[in-house]
Picture 1 (cartoon, rainbow, N blue to C red):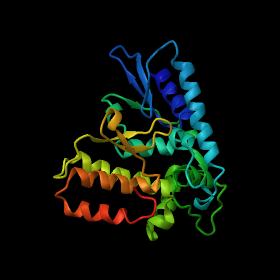
Picture 2: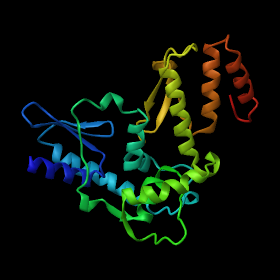
Picture 3: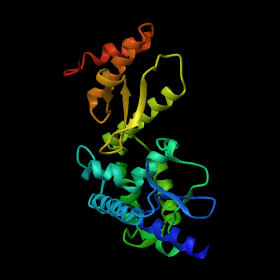
Picture 4: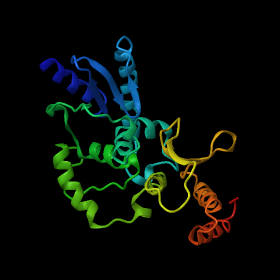
Length: 260
């Protein structure tokens, strides 16, 4: 058990606590999962994990170059969205990986000694990287190393003081939240006709997008592209001709220059 505990801590360190391990009935590794990828080949698993976790740490380091929300480019790069640990955890927490989370998985966490970072690093890793506004309280040394619990105790009161989505969230983050809202509406099987409409992760970035139809008639709506929101509303209105609310919204979007 001690060897297993050490292995889980090491994997937690390498993967920035994004990895999960499933053991078989004999206590052997059945698979390791990170995000929506499972590593199952025991002969290749070690090398594959190392390559994958290197991408995770590179994405983390790349995101740390941005000190504040306004430093982020118009669109957050695909490699940060796909491999950054906070984006992976965001997808998991909002239900995009439910098909991959099975009973009996063990979450890999870092050893206690590895859980200290500076306030500046916590802020970059947990806020700026996923397009949330930075907060630096007065009389705080941003380079002082603290635990996650201490960081949370400092940051939550600051965040809860005021929140304006347009000012505090990057446009890609707002697109993620809007897609997630529609995901929940679609899954609730409301009175609207959502037949043939589903949410999937985009191949390159693993950003959630809405897909409608199949084969040649398939359309994808990536809300990071502003006109995609109107396109989806128009598509949904065409499938629900009796829904006056959708009809009005679609008509409003059609007035926007460039929408079709």
